[in-house]
Image (cartoon, rainbow, N blue to C red; front, top):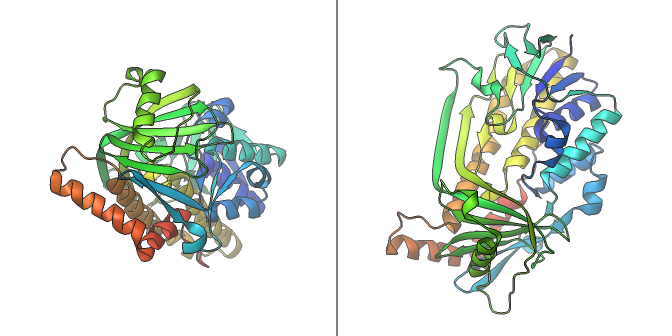
Amino acid sequence: MRTQVAIIGAGPAGLLLSHLLHLRGIESVVLELRSRAHAEARVRAGVLEQGTVDTLVEAGVGDRLLREGLLHHGIELRFGGAGHRVAFEKLVPGRAITVYGQQEVVKDLIAARLKDGADIRFEVDDVMPHAADTDRPYVTFGGQRLDCDVIAGCDGFHGVSRQTIPPGVLTAYEREYPFAWLGVLARVPPSTEELIYARTDRGFALHSMRSPEISRFYLQVPPDEDVAAWPDTRVWAELKTRLETVPGFELSTGEIVDKSVTPMRSYVAEPMRYGRLFLAGDAAHIVPPTGAKGLNLAVADVRLLTRALAHWYETGSADLLDGYSDACLKRVWRAQHFSWWMTTLLHTFDSDDAYGHRLQLSHLDYVTSSEAAAATLAENYVGLPYGAAE
C-alpha cells in the first residue's frame, strides 16, 4: 500500500491532521491501536481555546460544537472563603473558551473523515514506523506495509512513534509533580455556570462540566492514590469540603459514572522531528491539566504541520517542514510555563512551610486584585491568537 502521509494515532491530533490534509488535497491513512468505540468514549480534556474552536469551525467540523458546546466568558478562583471571577469579556474582549468534551471532538472528526471516504484503520496490531531518516519511510502493521512520504506520530505519550527515534536524537525535559488528580464524571447538573478552581488547605479541587446534565470534578490526591480508596460517598464529602467554602454555595450530588487517577507531569521532547517522522500532540509534549492546554496544543501542532506539508507538496520547498519543530515549541513552552504556573498557584505542596503558604495566598490575592495580573491569566487561558505563520 502507499499513501502520502501515514498517521499513527486516531486521537484529536491524528484525526484533525488527516482532515486538514484532505482539505488541501493530500492523502493519508490513519492507523489506530484501539477500537473506534474506545476512541469515541475516552474521557479526556474538555476546555477548548478560542483558536481551537475557530480551527474546527473553519474546517467544517464545528457544527455540533457550536450547538452543544458551553461558551464561557470567565472562570472563578476560589480561596480564603471567597470567590473571585476572572472576566474574559473585560480582560480579553472577543475571546472565550468553550466546554466540549474531547471525545465529542473525536466523534465529529471520525464522522467527517468517514463521510469523505477516509482510510482509518482501528484495532491494528504491531504498528511500527521505519526508515524515518531516509526519503522512503514506511509503516508496518498487522503483517502489512504502508509506504509513504511522511510519517506523523500522533499516538500520544505512550505511543511507539517517539520511542522508535534513536537514542541521542531527542532531548527530554520533564518534571513530575508530587500529587495526582482524581477525575470524576457525574450525571448531575453543574452547580456553577463557570469553572471553579478552588485552592484549600486540604488540596486543590476543580468543578467543571461537560453538558447541562453532566458535571466533571477533579480532586488533588497523592501521586500513588488507588481509585478504589474513593467510594462515591467519600468523593462527594471531599468535594463538598473543598468547594463549599463560599457562603451560599451548595454542591449538587448525583450518580458517579466514571472515576480515574491521572498523574501530573510536564514533559517536552525536542526536536519534534526525526527525518521524515514528525511528532504532534502528546507524542511530543505533556502538560499538567490545570491550564487546559493539552488538546489545544495538539491542534496548534497539526495546523503548523498541515501548512508545512502543503507548502512542501505545492512548491517542493522543505523550509516550513524544517522549521516545524521550532515553530511548535514556541507555543509549547508558553503553555508549559502557564500550566506550571497555574499548578503551583493552586495546589498544596507537602514541602511548603508557613512562609510558602503565605506566598501562595499573596500571589492569588495579587492575581485577583490586579487587572494586569488577571489579564495575563485570561490571555493565556483562552489561548494566544495564532500568528500569520500558523
